[in-house]
Amino acid sequence: MECILKIEKNCWDNLDIYFSSLVHINGKILYVSDENVDKLFGDRIKPVIEKYGVLKTQYVDNNTIEYAMDIAERIIATDIQYIVGLGGGKVLDVCKYAAYVSKTKFISIPTIISNDGISSPIAVLKRQDGKPKSLGCAIPYALFVDLSVIMNSPSKYIKAGIGDTLSNYTALYDWKLACMAKKETMKDLAYLMSSTALDTLLGCRFDKVDYSFTKSLVQSLVLSGIAMDFAGTSRPCSGAEHLFSHALDYYLPHPTLHGFQVALGSIVMAKLQNREYNFLLKYLKQFDVDINPKTLGISKDDFILCMSKAKSLRPGKYTILDMVELNDEMLAKIYDELCEEL
Image (cartoon, rainbow, N blue to C red; front, top):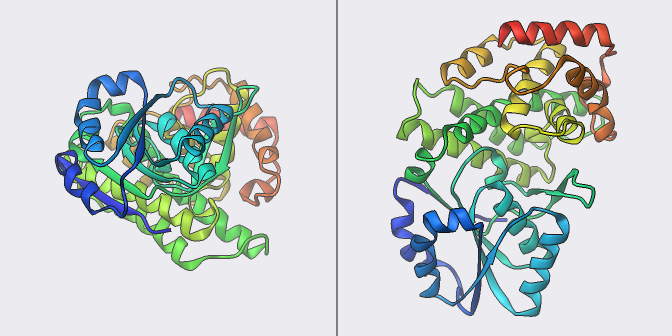
């Protein structure tokens, strides 16, 4: 699916121009945000929407599958033609899935960039039991990223975005392993896109989060998301490091940001893959991305449990975890190494 994409400094100042170029945007338009984000930025977005259709508003207070389905039902029942999402991952994932179910075009306006979900064909929502569920959907019809807004967002989200991009390193290797084991089919263009996203970030000659670095990071995250759409699978950006993160989400009462968890998972899986990873450690430390398991609130027992359970969460997904024999002693040793190295 083609995505209209604008990644610019002060991008929102040109929203009127961008909206005017969209095909057949009129009728009812559902604006979705949360109340805090709306108070900060709503006055910049809603007046533009009102020029092109009848503005309807929805404030997101949870990210359950049921809630996204309720919004999809509202879209269908009231003949809404576009859905505009303003906010972070919770809001955008709800919008993405609601738009997919209702077959409505989704315009995404992110306020943070903590992972590649801003452009991926995957929405992470909560089941009835509160556990996360990754659901296939479609990439946004249009994506407008204002780099000025992103640069002024809390630094932890930018750091998480760095971690999510770096996790492509082990994900791509796992994809190769799955193809060699004849469990998956390689999609060369998608592989190239994900690899380029990783190389773009690693190749940046920056040592601080400035405009040029932020643009490179956003481009890498967007490219990663689109790579998954091209592949028709999450494999370009999701391997065993993501299985580990899924286990943390499932078993820990208070998991942390996805980008931190998969970055930690990448260091673990690089060890199991017997691959060089010091350059990843150096890059993370350069931007003060702290993924020490103790800092993230992951105890040794938590780590052993989640590593042991990771493979079972996606049993059909072939990764390095299918090629190594894990035991508590080995995992305890890896945990101690991580605490020392990170």
